[in-house]
Image (cartoon, rainbow, N blue to C red; front, side, top):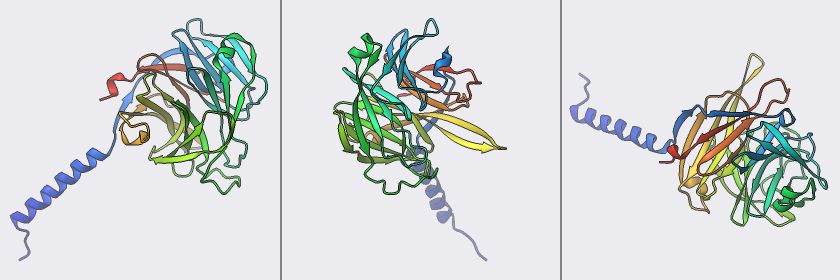
Length: 304
């Protein structure tokens, strides 16, 4: 007669318990959030793809490619654009994100949907000039990826980039990997010039990363993104935010992580930190037919 001893059953039980605990520890926690709807976006920014916090009543924002090389100051109280600043010595081929340090803003012309671009660049713009003039020039940071060898046109590649942050003396870029749904972390110098980006690390983002921001105290990074699925020829979006915190500056993916699933099912594209741990994020509407909003959320309660 075949049988399993009580001792064998006991050890099988222990194995299952410890395996489950191990898996729970390695998987990041996921929380669904319902952010506050703050303001409807003016129609001029119908393809908004990047924004940075200016003060309690305004943001700087820009459109995606083909909408001109303009930075728009958005009034959050009056729900209008206060003014628009022309970047006169460059164009907007595919602007995807914006970041800042104490003296400059950096606009990433790094959209690369088909993986064939050889003219990737960052536009570096004086904040003093941006605040005081209606037309300004940009310094140009040109770059290429060290791991890209094939520049043929395809939608299945890992060399798109829609997310950038300023960290100390460097710019950090996070790729939008159409092929494997991961993200790669690259770094670049902040000085004008032509560079090969430094590939640092890869992260299992489990979706397309479309924006990035870093908190004022430099200890929390938020990556915005979404899953996209086509059902009956209709695109369906499941947006999310990755919070990276308690990290070392040379290993930002090895600290603590928290994934926030956003209950607004649309194509989220831009994100920025405000004061404290408040974040603002928004979506685009390429057809111009859907109302667009800037949403806000305080992420402090999720940082544990």
